Image 1 (tube, rainbow over the protein chains, first blue to last red):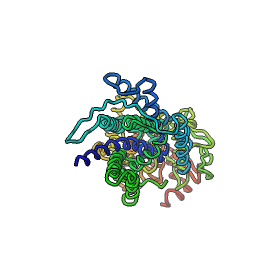
Image 2 (cartoon, one colour):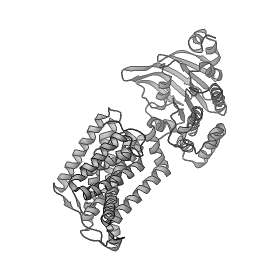
Image 3 (cartoon, rainbow over the protein chains, first blue to last red):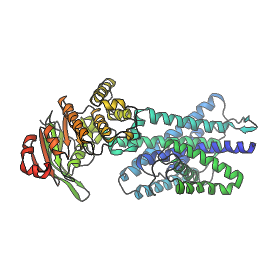
Image 4 (cartoon, rainbow over the protein chains, first blue to last red):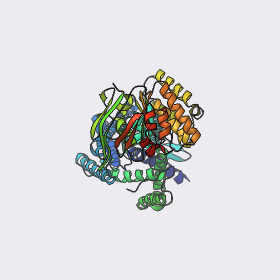
Length: 303
Length: 237
């Protein structure tokens, strides 16, 4: 029972990272119908940016008090902002001109952008895993016999706060409404006076910033990062987005948590070598039996 | 100077030429009907005015200022409202959200409140359904929403693309009456219609498009009386 709860908490922590990444996939798909395969690498870039900012601030170990808040805060917001800018640049340079091209063209471009980012990061930090400073103190809280680390509280708390902020933005603001309108009917949105280029850029900004938050969070959680991290995490987050119903924000969050929990339980019950099998088996089952996803309404076109 | 003037407009879709040298004008305060069969180029003309398709040749000007290089959102801000073919309401959003979006370019709260009041007074049915999802409205209600939404930006020129299409006859009467009312309160209207007879009754002038060219033009009364027009577009009565 204790192990069950411990694995559940593990899964939720892992899932909150997937959920944050999945939101970017689903937002971009929703607004321009593109599976942005470079998105996983923007997530890795988020942990690299966090790492660089922490190094700049001289934060190499455990932080306390105001230093913790300031340094961690700067690394978090800095990574989110820089990833957001990278996302906007990717859209502007690689995708915008292909917006009305056959769907295969932007898809292959996205794979190309993914390679470029991966190789750039490999040049930047080398081909081996890079340690991420353990900035959080580590007092575990024991709830019902299960130890929950501060890392886990921070990971899940930040993810949920970010998702709530996103919901408020999308449903409560003028720009959020413009994003939903553009996703539903691009030409009708233009007839409302919405500048869809700005709206699409904003979608990339927010989606990529969320990946930046996920990158920071994963660095803090795993205390390690690697230039190739985004490939696997990106595929799993994409699976989460499809499972939840691609294009649907709540679906991406739900899918992210489910995939995290499945991965954690598969590792526990079947062994680590089976965890990817379990996750992608779920993708296949979802595509066969519920192609529109748990909360989705529209079928993603084949890619 | 005409409110809207178009001269020598060509539009291509890929290799297909949809408009061939279309020229027309809309004077301030008029209702102008744009008639013709399927594929004649009526919708393309409106889409070119709104900037949704680019003209390969010719000029479009609002109050003498060229619209050809303008983006669709800039054209809305210059004062053109467009209720497109097929209504295109945001089905997943409420009636209120649709109307809010119609006023996307309107920054003043006072102007927004005044427009909303005007639209809801024009279409009382929308008032009853403000919090309802637009996708669950009837066809007639969706058409009212599409027109209301286009009015929310406070346009000088309102373009309506087949507002009566697919509506029950009694609703068709209502829609035409409302269009005349909107015009009487000072909004210029460019009306695309299949329902030529009805459209010409409320229009000051009309143009008939045939395969991308203006085939006939004249006052509403003259076009109604023209045997060639009657033969092709009014049904031989």
